[in-house]
Length: 317
Image (cartoon, helix red, strand yellow):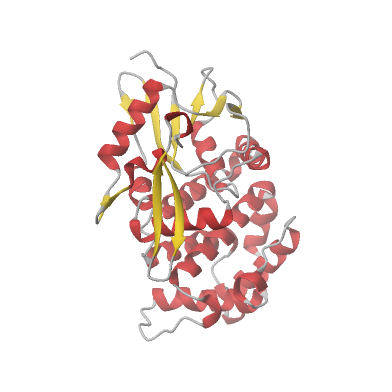
């Protein structure tokens, strides 16, 4: 084996709108894998991508797809791609860069594009592979077909220069983070770990809430200082400071206070075992709640990296 550069395999099905290779962070480049790297990736996918019923998605990166709706049925139809058009992409450390690999992974996951890292290949005496749980979660058939259909409808797989620049900016924030706020990196790791939970697990939603509460709330001092009240009052303040505020009316057809109150009621129904709880129409369904709270948490984490002292002070208020 001649390849010694460490590289990261990207799980997303991508359609880059940039010329490759392109530098993500100093020394790390988004690119297509070479033949040797491709063999390593394919071998890993064959061994680790779970079969879902009659489907095995280990070769999804070698196919294009089209969602077809007909009178009698709707289905995803797949077509084999030529080798040069296959969708395997990596981020490679081409120069032995000392940039922090974990911060690069965090920057990718926290970006609006949500560039999901499937496995890190670090070459020493052997190949080191990690993040197996994210593989199982990503290829969970209960959401993977929906993921592909969503890509076709929204073009969410088309990564562009703005997406790359956002990843660079988040990396700079992480790299320059004062050591007294180093706990934020652990919180980000928790956020990434929560993403790896099964899509149908309500513990995933609880995990996002736990991160949000630990980030901006304190133990209530009295009945007028409840967690729910802290959440909506502080999220209103933060949202007003965002360059592009979270559109709660679009998400839930309600203002922030009502939205957060109903989301917190949903969270409490899980925590306290309220089995007779009925999801309000505005929250739609379990999956919608989970994806919405994930969006809110991601935006607030990035804002916290930009303003760590402010959020630290806000937490105690």
